[in-house]
Image (cartoon, rainbow, N blue to C red; front, side):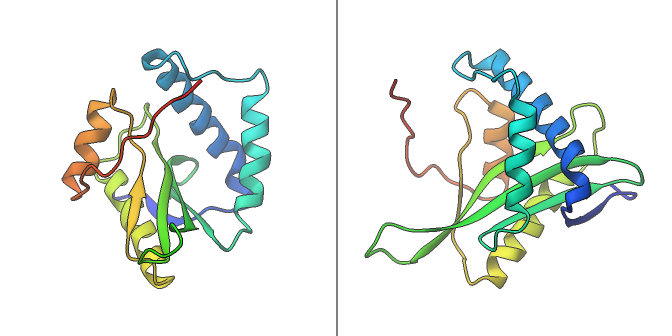
Length: 156
């Protein structure tokens, strides 16, 4: 990861971010047939992600090389259940690494950047969703100290 820098995403990153997003979702589809991509999913995601860059409750961090992105993470500050402490939670909704360009330590570095941003917003508690069938993702988050909290149920 010596040639990779961690920085906030910019509007000029959106095409590369959407490429990484689509690649990741296509891989996830192989493991979970419930994931269905719309014909224009990449364009829809890219348009929406553009609005996230200006949203004060969202942070998008990228691992950038000289000419490309090697991964990204997205975090949101969201209200907790009313009456519970803390009043707000950090929610990591995406952690995507380029499957074709391994960068040792990049996932940890992206999460560290997001954790720093959450801490700067006085949001110490962070949650993320990791599919049961994604053993590598489960192991990664556990290695960072994450523990199981709730089951998310799919109701169709």
